[in-house]
Length: 66
Image 1 (tube, helix red, strand yellow):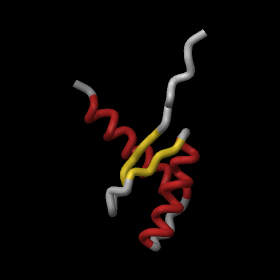
Image 2 (cartoon, one colour; image 1 turned 60 degrees about the vertical axis):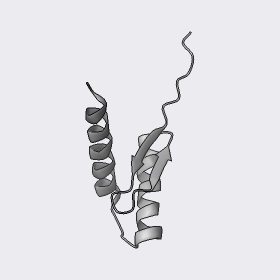
Image 3 (cartoon, rainbow, N blue to C red; image 1 turned 30 degrees about the vertical axis):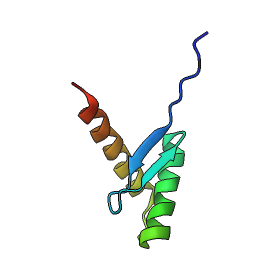
């Protein structure tokens, strides 16, 4: 049996650079939406937030490839 890997996800807020971390994509989307509202007063639909999170994660993964 393989040991459980830490799969914590991380993105940075595009407005202020604050790191936002979560255990999975759904939680990351929720935290991102909360941050955008609480810190920047920008309301964001779940779909829009999910698109932004996925694009940010994809860009981050591509930048780590050799």
